[in-house]
Length: 307
Image (tube, rainbow, N blue to C red; front, side):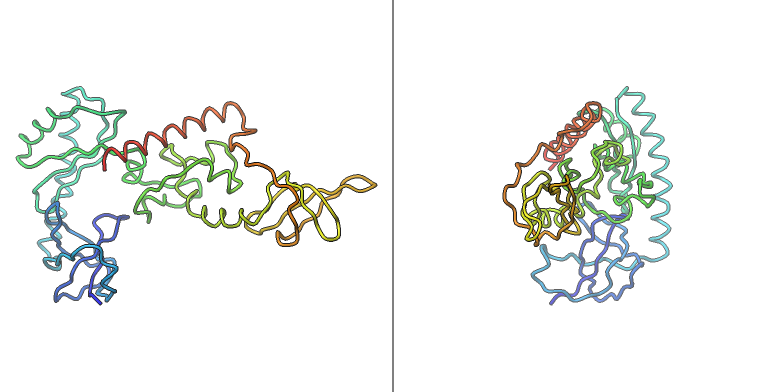
């Protein structure tokens, strides 16, 4: 077993384990740690705790100290400097006539580096901009191009559910989302209903995907021919995935009637082939969905290039 504490540098953000040394810290306190990027001001989110050593992927670095008054003051000073650096960088961007949008500035705690985050369509040659910024700030400068999801994560806001965006409240990493996920969850393929503030597919489509896939394995598809013990053969009219209920259409002498069954009460005589998830979608909505798909592919490509 190994004693650790968990910290994060931004909220929300990934949690990193550090060796607490002889320090006993409480959740909500701040500590100064050494990272590959230099010293960082971090928030404690997991108090001193023993965990199995096999859960620790890399060698733990020790915390330098528990943050004191001077550390808090220095961190606040850096926050003020970031506002000034933001304005100065925007002036330089205009001067160099670069087609990029500055979104955030981050000072490393020990002032060893300043990071400037921006969005842009395609690649930007910012070498001259970096030289001018380095001359102004007399420290190392790094410009990082981020995607629209990252931009919204840094800005914040509320989703269509009325709650704070997942990416700004708890989601540490972005996972691949697809239109197929919306189809499998029986969600309307209206682009405005399945895309988030960032203009990309909503991250929450991923949350229940595994559960839906597991249940879909047990259920016949709409249009399949099934057999019920008392009613005989019928055609699946609709499916309630989470409840694992199936509505079946039967024919008798008087016409048609409908009846609901649990999936286990039916025997599949002939299932139907998997349909194209875009089948039956309005043409205008289809164009918008294709755009969303293309954007998702471009985001994945950019992420792979940055790794």
